[in-house]
Image (cartoon, rainbow, N blue to C red; front, side, top):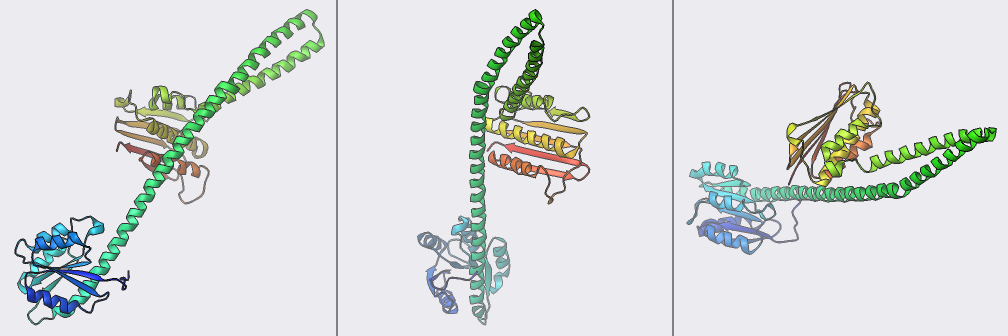
Length: 376
């Protein structure tokens, strides 16, 4: 990454020898951007300089009056990464081992002062390399921060969407129960009364018209019963039975017992750990875990032709581990297939509660969906 040549370059020279400080200034005077030199004779003075204003690079002598350069290097590298400064360690010819130790402790580079002064010609290149390395590290850190902010924003969005989904489905379920469900119940009662009256009339008169009316009534009765069943199924889909009242384990058990896609040749097995018989988690965690399990079970039954679907549940009041494993046909990743949007939904639900979600599959040997949540 190129260095901005339109600004001043601030270099702090930390050395208690005035001659060595002057040599450093002379060696670096032609750097771009134009350098401004600040000086410190002790580690304490250097730290004061670093607190007072931004510094772009530190040239640090190993031997200082109040502490050695390695200790000051450690303090500088303890700053937050956005305020950390590249450090070039300067040592004498008899301190080469110190230079190696400095690199291990995070120095950007080092310079060994030789007697004939050749190190002065190397110093500009070494400092420029340290500055560019710093810019690269900063750019990488900024990218990581941006990615983390994106993940947090995405998690918060997923949480809001899941909360909205819960509220909307709860309201819709309540409307179906209180309005359409009650209307169907009233129709059922009224129709049963009319049917009873028709039977009495038919028994008394034995007319052909009455017999036809009875057949039509029987057909209408079947349609009413079907509508009632369908409304009940929609209510089950929208509002997981038992989840709020009795918790995740009871809701999963009920889901398997009454699953609309269950078949006689497929075993649906719930395997909870003994310790969680009465465990409860936060409502959002239980809801997300239940919906992920429901989606994984439905995907297996619809698309994988399994012989067994096994649901495992474990954890404690601060953690939850859920897995849904089947022995079906498996998934070929990277190939669009039915149910792939459901997989995206499972990942988003896990993200919304800060959980890890992993989907593993071997074609021909089955698929396992795993959710692991820990309280923050």
